[in-house]
Length: 155
Image 1: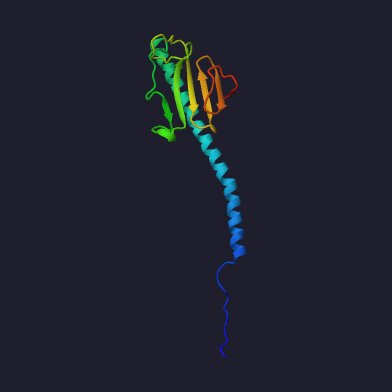
Image 2 (image 1 turned 30 degrees about the vertical axis):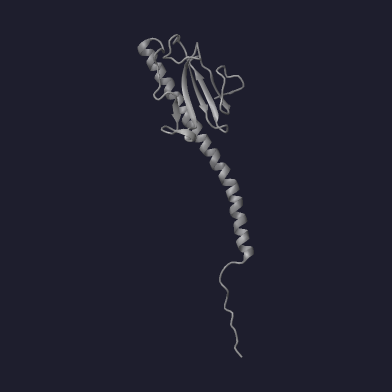
C-alpha cells in the first residue's frame, strides 16, 4: 500500500483571491474619480492661463495701436490642449468686440474699444470661462456661458 504525502500546498484559496479583488475594486472606486477631478482641474487651469495670456496680448496691442481693432489670435479659435483636433479639444477660446459681441476685433464695424474673451468648454463636466476688458470674470459649469455672466460664478 502506498502512502500519499501531501506537502504544504502552494497558492491562494478562492476566499483570499476574492478579498484581494474586493480591495482592488474599492481602491479603484476611490482613485479613478479623484484622478478625473485632478485632470479637469488641470485643464481648467490651463484655460485660465491662456485667457490671461491673450488678455495681456490685447493690452499690448492697445498700447501700440490705441484700440483693440485688428487683434487676432492664431489659430482662431484657440483650442486647448494646443494642437488637439476633433474630440480631443477641451476648450475653444475666442476674442470678441466688447461693444458688439457678435463680431471679432478684425470684423468690419467692430468698435475696438473693449473686448471679451470666451473659453467654451467642449465637455459638460468642465467650466466655461469669460473675461472682459470691463472687469467681468465668470465661469459656469457646462459648454456655454452668457456674455453678461448671467447664472455664472466669479473666478
